[in-house]
Length: 176
Image 1: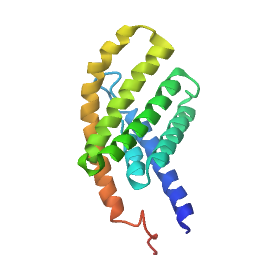
Image 2: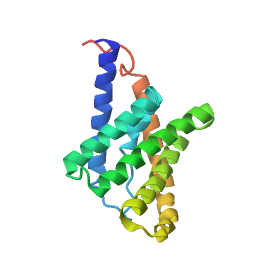
Image 3: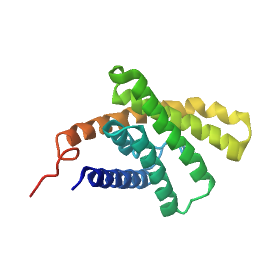
Image 4: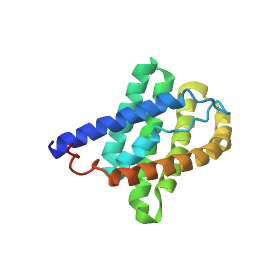
């Protein structure tokens, strides 16, 4: 299979993985209504580390659009909060990865993404729904879970990347 086609197949696989993880985490009970684990960011981190920021942003946008279609929330407020939040998180993770190089691990990059996602979510909720500055008092309540889930997502993404680098995911497909 040509390299370009292989990359398209791999991107489609990661988009599907991100969508499945998003759907799976909606089934998990949450101790706080706004605290989601963000497991779909595992696919975003993998794309970022394998190919770069463009692919990570494409993956996030495609996953969020597909999730909105599947969930029936396309063009609803949840979609317009999720899309800019996801794209901003992917761009911020890419910027930190580029600026910090190897001085910042994938765990740190994941935490940056989780925190960015929460900041943009609150800003979008303010702009679209609440229109009261008291919403920003929720920052501390959002950031503590984001630190924890960002670390978990980073650990899982790191393990997945290690596994992928030992397999045929990047190189020639395994012939059976």
